[in-house]
Image (cartoon, rainbow, N blue to C red; front, side, top):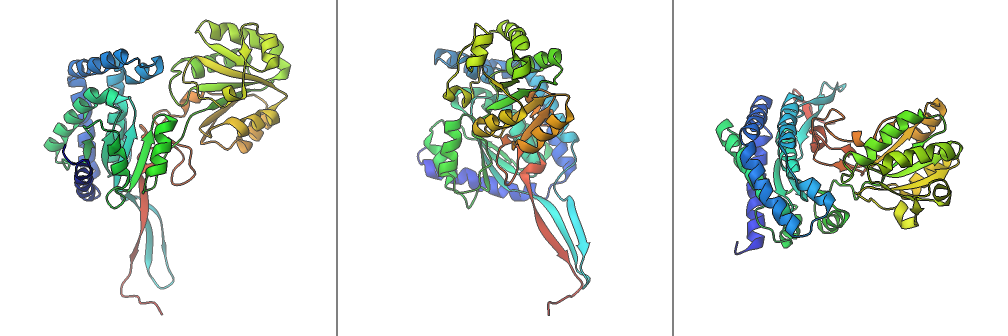
Length: 419
């Protein structure tokens, strides 16, 4: 690569051309590629794991954190999940061409609002090679070309995955540049891509807050993003307390390094004295450190005092901030102050508390008597997601195939003129 600016512009131009072809492809052709992609992933598990092992070894030698290694690691089960995700996306209705609404004007003009692709997606993400496949699948299904800029830690894994998918694209008849991976690790390339608003229609960053803030600051095109996932859960006095422990264990411990993992727990004061020690014992068995308010520290001897910074932190680790509150109103005040607007949950059987929480908490997803881990495209029926947005425009929550479309008006007449 002698000229990084030319490298980025040429890739973007190829993506733009591919997007014009993709926009008019049949759903059957796109689905054929998705199913073929799933088959090729299953057929090349050994090669994928070998490439991933190279990435893992380099990341470990570079001192990557436990959370980052978990994101980077592929297993046979995770590869199967990637393949199944492609098949689930293939089974979804094709959003392109959907008539959202239509009407007939008094002059006879037929007006329809029709769903169309966004065009070219520049997707910047960190060390999660499974996201490479998810993003490619979602973008192609929704008729978009995608430029993938993954973390250098996952380069060997992502290169192999994209090459496998592109082999299938050529056989099926998809544009060869529908899915492109930036194979250079120079961080300055991101800035060059972000200045190409004439070729790239939307940027989607997925990763740490620093990466996302950089993309937002430098992008000349719209950005779909969330900064971080400081997810809260309020346990009301009316909650099913044994089940609450199971839900909290799942939300915090299943995969602590992901954005929908629980980070902050709020407990009604009337149940704290008896129930918090039981919860602490269960979480302690998983190695969870509790950082609590003064009341929490009185009740749980192993808890350490929490700071204001702790309550604002996305730990991405086996650490949980805890606060005892007087009720749902104080819980919502805490959430309004510290939540990132990603996922917040309430455990309660009192319908008045549930209604108050659902109406008063302004987050992309609100969970009632369920783990925060369900804020995920696959779990919510989207097939998969390219990311979770905490914005209110253009999309909010998990972004699946429909969220990667916009619409245009199609007006059909028989000679009408405006008077």
